[in-house]
Structure formats: structure tokens, C-alpha cells
Image (tube, rainbow, N blue to C red):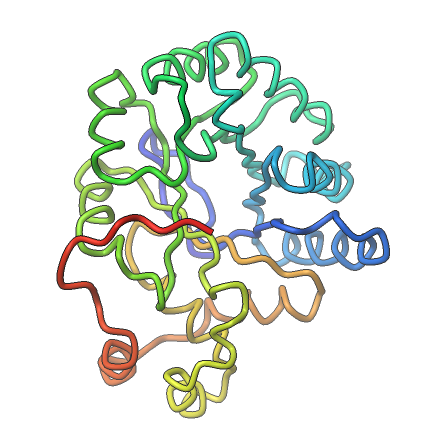
Length: 276
């Protein structure tokens, strides 16, 4: 498994597992748990969830999947922005810990920016870290100006910024990814294959054909090949998670990358950070 390091030197897998919309359908519960556990077997031990996902149902699913294997897993969860205050964040964290069946989160993120001042969220995150409730904290969906404000507010402890990034959402390459790299903050790419829609994109077909892989694997490898980026695709079945893991073995050539740039042009100017 390829790894990269958080700012404090902690190694984490470059390829993890997302869980958005997992845990919502009881009929899929067994296959989703098996997918997460198969991913763990394959080294995809970073699992991302959030209190927002199914109003906690995703966290409960993850908790069941990692039962008896907590020591193998790097668990990430996210707090609603309205829960990011000094009094509300500890309460939200405790609820997430209970649903996950653990006493400490490896990484806790502000899901997106709301009305709570960033300085207050930083203070609350650092307090949770000091209390041993979380090991690292970070943010999600913050653009460059927000990140500058976060650092000015004492947020040097920020371990990552989770953002929407894939072949069709290349805006972060213009300024946000270079900013994060400058400050040695890894980016975490959610929806790295555009929720599966890249499977049908003609711009990937020829590259996939040359390598004998599917288009999703090409799109995922493209994200993973960028230094300092963690990818967290969702996979709801064993077969899907095995396909994702196989993307780590794919190496894209200069010809491949040039063709992908032609099909998915890189940004030439600032774009507002997208969210889904």
C-alpha cells in the first residue's frame, strides 16, 4: 500500500475508503460491511465517514465493520459546521465515538465552513486532541482564503483538507493544491471518480483499453499519482473495492497523461471550490 505522511509524520494509506450513502439501505448492509472489511484486508485501512451521512447510520456501519479490528484502521469522521463550537464540538464528537464504538478518532474534520468562527473551531479541536478524544484534526471544503484565515487563527495543527477533486473537478490544481503542498498539508480527494460517472466518460476509454483496465481504475490512478493526495472512493461491494485496490498497480505513461489533459483540461485560472 502506498502511504503518505500527515504533517506530524504519521503515515496513512494514500488510498482509503469513503462511506457516503453507505448504511442507508438495510438490504445492502451485509455487502457494505463485507466491502469495508475486504478493503481493510487489502490495506485500504483509512475509512472516512461523517455524522451527516445517514444521520449517523454510516458511522454505525463503520463501527460494526471495524469491530475487533480497531487497531488496524485509521478512522476519519466529520462534524457539521453548526456543531463546530467550543461547547457543541465535544458533544458531537462523543456521539460519533459512540456510534463508531471507539474511544478516539484518528482524524476529525470540520465538514464545511459555517457560522462558527474558525478560531473557535481550532480551539475546540485542540481541546479534543488534548483530552485524547482525537489524534488529529483537519477541515473539509475550505478554499485558499479560508485556509489562510485558518492558519492565521492558530490552525497550524490542521492535518488535511478534504475536497472534491477528480478529472472533471480540477479547479484545486490552480491554487489550493499548491497552497496545501507549500504548507505540507495533504489533500484528501472525495468523489475521486465522480461517484462512478467517469465509468462512462469517453475521454478515458482509450487509456483504459491500452492498459486492459476499466475507466474507473484509470480515473482513480490519475488522482493517486499526484503527490500529497489521499483518495477515498466509495465501494459498496467486494468486487468494487478489489477493483479500486488494483488501481494502485496501474502506472500511467506520459502519453496517457497527455491524452487525459486533452480530454480533461487543467485549469488556467482560479475556480471557486466545488462541493457535492
